[in-house]
Length: 225
Image (cartoon, rainbow, N blue to C red; front, side, top):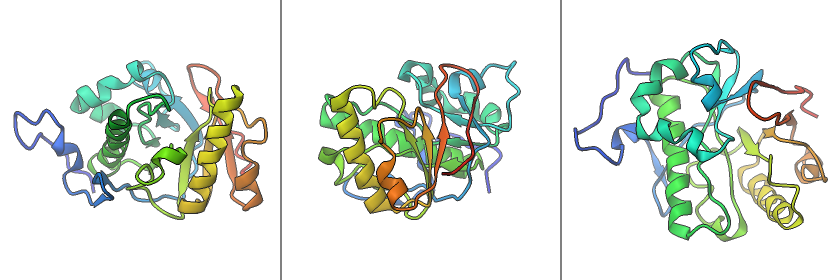
C-alpha cells in the first residue's frame, strides 16, 4: 500500500535513496526489483503530455518513450509529480537512454534509474507498473536484473527498427528478453514492422501494439495477436 507522503531519508539525499526504500535488490549492480503484472493498458500517454493539467486521459498508462529531456524532471523532483501521476491507470517504468555508443557506466546508471523510478511508482505511489525492458548482447549480464519473470513487459520499438543495424541489435535483444524473462505478453510501443516481433510470436507470446504517433494519446490495437 502506498504511503501518503514519502520524504527523503535525509535532507542531503541527492541520490534519491528514498525512492528505493523497502526495495529488494538484484545482481552485481543492485538493481531495485520491480514486481510483475498481467495488466494490459487501454492506452498510453507520454509523461510530458500527462503532466499537463489540461490532460484528462486518466484511463491511460503514463510512458516514457520520448526524449530524455522531456522526463528528466521526474528524477530531479519526483515529489512534485506524485499526485499527478497517481491520477492515471498506471505507468510503464522509465526509459532513460542506454544507447549502444554510451559508456558502460552511463548505461548502468540509467538502467538503475529506470528500475528505481518504476519501484517508486509501484510501491510508493501505489500505481500499476509494467516493467520497461531494454537489453543488448553486451549488457545481458546485468540489464535484466530486477525484472520479473513471466510478467507482461513493455518494449519501446519506435525509432529502433528503421535502420538495419539498429534493427539487428533490437531483434537480438528481444530474443534475449524472451528467452530469459519468458514474458506472458508484450506491450509494444511503435510500428510492428520488418518482422521484428516474429520471434515472440513464434513462442506464442501475445503482442499488444501501440503505434507511435508522435506526442499525444496512443491507443493500442488490443488484439494481442
